[in-house]
Length: 631
Image (cartoon, helix red, strand yellow):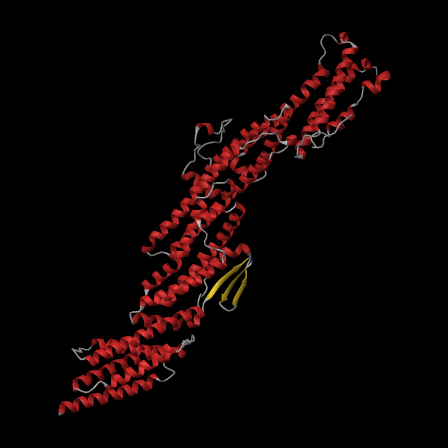
């Protein structure tokens, strides 16, 4: 009898404590931690009530009533198609309290020695069933809150915008050249911050209920959808190796340009923000943070590496070099970001794959550069270049190596890592002279650029041989070597090639100018110089014949060489002046010595067709690319 009174007393005491706790819990001004503490005490005291019932032999009516109440609340939410968590922790608190009570009841029931009491086992089964439905609903609410409150990054040329799924909430103007540096420090909230307490509560409840796998799967699934939208907005669409292989270069070029800009934004801004979101949502669950971030980001990063692979195994063309270098440099620049994002030891495999992609790009750069060298060496020609001007190949090569210099540091590194050699002796590039400055101090890039110029010169000599006129061969070589010198002399390439090399090249085109003068004017001027025997022995007939031959030869040169072209005005002036001084000097001397034999009084119009001033004017019309005639 005394024991019965003791049990009854304990029950009344526990009931009073429960009443006080629930009254306090209903107070709206309680902090979250206090509210949770009261809930825990509520569950423990309820468990004591159940224990007391067992000791006193009483029924399970109280726990059944409590279970019925919790089950009704959970079912009402589960059957309601609408979402009950509207982003406010206050609005969600009642739902969370019910779920916590179901969880506490299930845990306490599981800890009791029920023996073979089927009634108690049924209560435990019902508690687990209610908890399961509560978790299913909670998972749906979790996905809904994530989706409804997501923010995505939208980048456009000249500005960076952060958008909600409904509208734009932030927009900052930015200069295009500052986008890269801004992206390094700019991290955004991918989910609106005001819903983070709700998400944290859901995560804590699901993990405490051992539904952590369902929670992380829902999170990863939701964020992958958001990631796909970001990739779409960044124009980083998935492209197969076959599709890349079939693309023409202009289209692929534009795709790579977009890919490079988008990748910087994606890694430095978006992935960094995604990692922050994982940290915020899962807080103390370190393993979940890392695993979720990896699962969310790995498909996109494999997509990045697949595109690199597709570009590397495509056809090797010299025009692709600069875009491949851009890809190499951006991946290299992003190594610190990648290491920071995937710093866990378990991510070592991915980091290795990332670096292998960089290595493949480096090999592709070297193969492409070698392709360029060989293309310069063996560029075919079947017809001589019109007017002896600057060949398209010369312009292309000089413009190409000018752009190559923008990647000097990268190319020096790559070319030094694996010194390239020509495949076979038949493809060896001849070096015409030993450079006094070709020592170990010459950079790998400088060495290869000199090989390119040497290849170009060799090819130009082959193209020059297509001209039947030897004079035009020399003019063509003079024009092209002079063009190379000017392009190198007037740019940073001068540092690469050095002044000794430039002096030798200047000597080459000056020598071609002298060779032209000799080939064109040597035999013509000899007509006026040659005087076999004494002056008095030269007959008037011979003098007149030589003079007539000179005039005819001069007119023929004028007719052909006014159609030849020296594009550089200064070089044209210098050659015109040089030719004029030599021709006029010989012509004037001839007239002074043989003027009387030409009988100008009787044959002025026929014998002395051009005076010295006429010749000077005509010589100054050479090399303008417009054929003229004196007839």
